[in-house]
Image 1 (cartoon, rainbow, N blue to C red):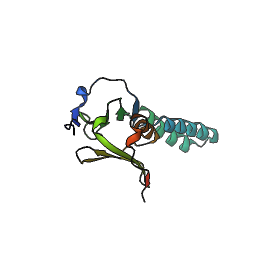
Image 2: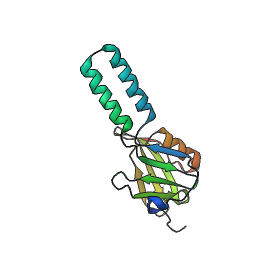
Image 3: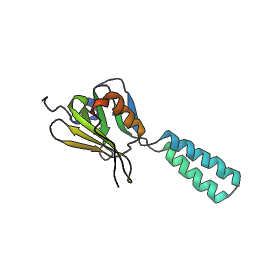
Image 4: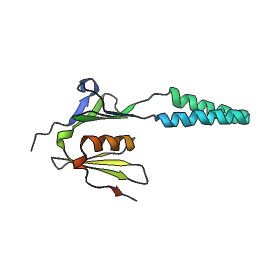
Length: 148
């Protein structure tokens, strides 16, 4: 059994490596949908609706976009929304198994580390993260499970 290397790390100390997967709090698909809504509302010529949808679109598009997950070849980083100085760094070598869970409250990834720890990712989990885990460690996927 290898020693535990995963830990909280200051963001400036994250090792440099080529990013394989990056997920942020803003989804590009949401931005496209919002601007389509702005265009459709403009066609209706309802002034109040135009103002509300345009303000929402501007706030969404120009508001802060935070990284929530970055995946690399040998490790991945989960950024903390509450404390932007630290992130969780988890090495792939320390993961015995992982599970992608589809729930009514959003998708989740459950990680089973080699020191009998469990680590749950439940913020901004999507198919892109699932694809990353399938590419990087397909043999360690435990099972797919649907929760209620």
